[in-house]
Image (cartoon, rainbow, N blue to C red; front, top):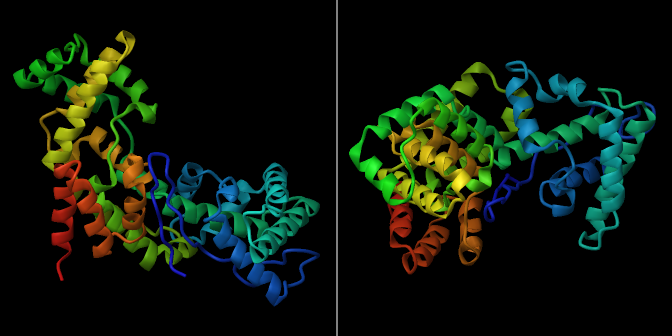
Length: 373
């Protein structure tokens, strides 16, 4: 089944069916014997289950760690072969076994799913008995799940989209925006002040952006082109990428596609909303945080093309993983995440937004029109 994804609210997770254990890499139990057909089927089912079941969310590596590993793997190398020696440890094998022991009897799982979890538990226990050797097939299953989750959640795409906030760039952006009378006036009206030292303001901003929940949040309607790029990669290239790794050509092409999608999404209307949201945060901020939010506003207001603004691109990357959705729109947005080419899902999402926030609905309409056909 092809992978799919969803982004249910801020803190939501992309989900999807992922890579399956590959025959011939090793046996899940007992001295190098090849597993029988039923064991392979159970492990294949488990690999999919681990990407779908909330109870198994902690199986494997955190998406950020898995994304970093994938991007650091030797170009063109099989990621499992290249990365297994870096993650194999008794501590990880025991953690996996403990989680699986708690999960195998979960009443939320059906009989086939519990059998799959039990097969994975036997695999983890066998790995412990073997001393957690790097060539044990547990690491293939664990890495397969982890790397696919890093793709499905957008963690890999976030890394390729934005490398983080450069404080020198931020200081320069703050200084440029502070020279704009309109930006100064808006800042003063919200209770902020222009910083005396742009470099010091950038430092405060750097501390603020480490706390993602304190930043303005973009909704699904603001990243539709990025969602489409993510969807197409998962459908058409995800398996090959995880099996063959990121060759220089593949990485360059993927980064270019994400860049084009980010530019299409980051319209002047989205930028204006980020600035307005930042001013609202500034008005509500505690006095100790006001300078940081003032720096945030000035950085967002910097007179540069929006797609070149590091802060805005960082917000796009964050929204690709954790979009902000109100409770009443979550189910509609989940359908769009599952397939951002689904016109019926887009139309339902647009109708819902139009009754509440017409400007957001208009973004959905323009995106739908751009699909053509």
